[in-house]
Image (cartoon, rainbow, N blue to C red; front, top):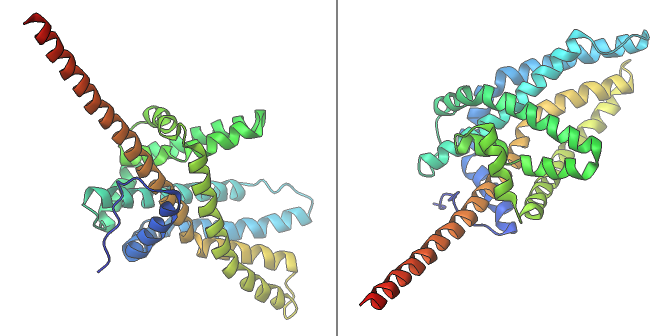
Length: 283
C-alpha cells in the first residue's frame, strides 16, 4: 500500500505538482463524493441558468435588445456561488485530512466546514477580487502580483481558521521571497488543467460542429450550448489547481516555521552563553 501524502513538508517545485497529483489519486473517491454531494445543487442550478441565459441572450441580441437581464445576473450569481462552494469543498477536505492524521474525511464532516466558512469566504473573495481588479486597472503587473499572493488567502482562512485581515497579512508573510515559486506552481497547474480539458473539449467540439450540418441549429448556437455543457461537466477538474495552491501553502508554512524554530534555538544558545558568561564574571 502506498504511503499517504504528508501535507506538512517542505517541497521542491517538482514535488509540489507530483504530490498534488498523488494526493488526488489517493483521495479521488471521497473527494469526488464530497464534490458531487455538496456542489451538486449549485452545479445543476448554474448549468440550467446558463442554458436559459444563453437562449435568452441569443434572442435578445437578434432583436437588438440588451443581454443584461435578470436571468443573466442570476446566472453570474450562481456561477460565483458554485465556484465558492467548489473551493470550500476542496479546502475543507484538505484541512480535515490534515486534522484526521492523513485520513480522508466523510461528506458530513466536509459539509460542516463548508457551512461554517461559507459567508466568510463569500465576502472575503469579493473583497480580494475588487483589490485585484483595482490593481489591474491602475497597472497590469500589480494585479498579477496580487492575484498570485491572494491565492493563499482562502487556504489560510480555512486551514488556520482565521479572519480575512489575518489571512491578508499572513499571505504576504508567506509569499515573501517566494512569489516566483508560487507563480510557477500556479502556471504549471493551469497548463496541466488546460491540456487535460483540451484533450476532451476538442473532440466534443468537432462532434458538435459536425452535428450542425445534420440539424437546423446554427453553429454559434451549437458552440454556445456545447461550451456550457462541457465546462460544467468538467468542472471537477478545477479542484487540481486548488490542491496545488494548498501544497505550496504547506511547504511555505514549513519553511517559515522551521526558520523561526531554528532562530529560537539559536537565540536560546546565545541567551545561555550570555548567562554563563555573566555568572563566570561575577564569580
